[in-house]
Image (cartoon, rainbow, N blue to C red; front, top):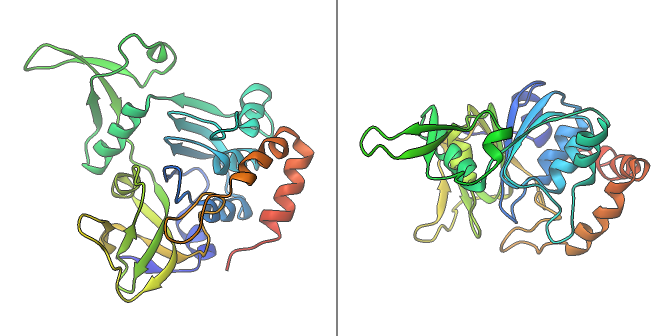
Length: 271
């Protein structure tokens, strides 16, 4: 059952050095506040999983938290590259990282398989792709019923999944509204989960077919107002497009990046 904690306590209690951590959210509800708390607590040797690593993973990589990244696309949406990620891959600063790249379809299926407790995901995919040449996790199997050649990848089963959502009720149920990516599957696939929310309410006000994560699937809930900024939270605040553009210059320069971390992450401790 979900436990209500401060963000600082949730990260301290449930994310450990060496853990495999998934932080999901598709274009919005990206858990920036939680990512910054991981940086503040100087977690190390993390394997990060995310379908679309963007600024929050650039920040975690640049802060030295990451040893491996499992992903299916990486970049600053609408702007360009992740320069802290590039620096780590190309020049080993602040440390080298290992990359395991999948297609979107494969990683989405891997989350779903993890949520179902399965060891692998099977899909029609990677036909004509060069990814199997560089990713040893991509295998091909024969369907026992049709003889069709299919791709197989390991299921994703993180130690911890971290997401942001609009609100939780006092029983620990969480409502995710708007564009929903693989947040539900990522939570269900994980051994532990941390959900940051904008607010705690008496009634979720969930509409028909809403995505509600039940309390039994969540380990910890922490209130983090504007916890997805500079991405957006439907019904609460809009995306800060200007910051995504500004990040390109900040991330290109190691000194500028370190100054930004000092002023915007380490000086702004979570409650």
